[in-house]
Length: 289
Image (tube, rainbow, N blue to C red):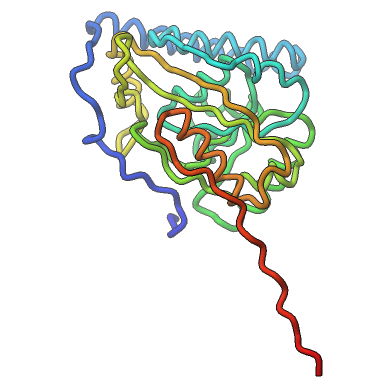
């Protein structure tokens, strides 16, 4: 059941840009067929994941996610990708702004990693099985009492040396702006003693104009969004890997969330003020008798 703290976005159909060039029905159908084929290959690969080792799983995941982007005609432009790929076995919380279902494909096409996802994805046909096999950590946003256990599990995963991808807005936005970053998941980075790696995502057309067409927003279904992307010509997804926020950079999870949000806003030229450390309260002195 939804609660007052459930993340919501004001974005809806009126946020979608218009005038983008499209492809014909045959080309769109071919893209959808290709995407289904990639998904089936991913599903058939699930039994192999436990036996091919970490390096094999990462290589397989990278190829699958790159194939998803190619199937939809998406060109991925990466800035600073070497910093993400060079992380080795050091854990980090990877945080991005959240626009589309394409976001996770783009991040994993650069460096495969585990993810935080809403629990209902696990029940999706075919895709849910693939996502679960990839080591996804599921969060139930409708049950607040499960949040501490989720944060503790995430901290343990980060401490073990894993990269984990999260969308701290808690829901998708159209891309013209980003939502407030919720602080809860950042507690896991603090508890795990690992850095936060912000990544800024932006969709544009081949000519350079930004587009919100790939966004998954409002009350539409995932099928609506997928079909809209399949019809779009010349889509470019820009992924910018930003400097890490080292452990100890922020005094608490709220400050760490604000620093991450400000870094992504700045990279997208939607500048927000960098938060300053809040003064700590001094303990109240009890006057001597």
